[in-house]
Image 1 (cartoon, rainbow, N blue to C red):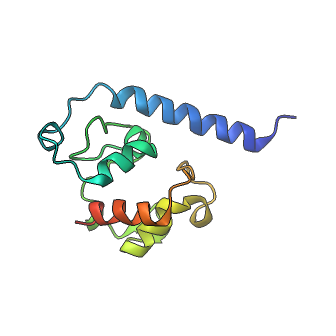
Image 2: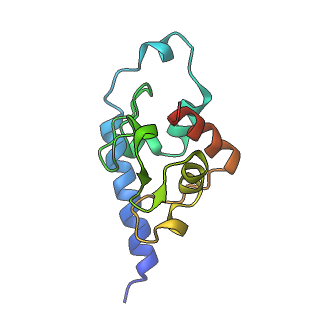
Amino acid sequence: MPDRRLIGSAAVLVLLLAGAAVALTADPPLDELLGQTPRAHELMRRYGCAGCHKIPGVAAARGLVGPSLEGLSQRIYLGRVVRNTREGLVNWIVDPRALAPHTAMPNTGISRQEAQEIADYLHR
């Protein structure tokens, strides 16, 4: 019988690759073309956020796997289980499966400090 973790990991990889293929077709926003890119943009691309989510202002972030991150600061919950506070968002970004074991969002290996930079950007 196949290992369930291996199957789950393969499924997440397929979702990430599908999201990345969609994301690569977008034009970069003007602020990125002018070199005024917040570090959070680069972090969201590096850790795969941009492959799964639409992220306003982030070049090529047009993923369709997860929800759009537009207006995230106005939402009450993250992943239907975590209060949408800065600390809740950081915890969700760092280890979503600790908070919602069956979420499709993978653990990316992002550091807490990098997650804080992304949370600051998304909660602006």
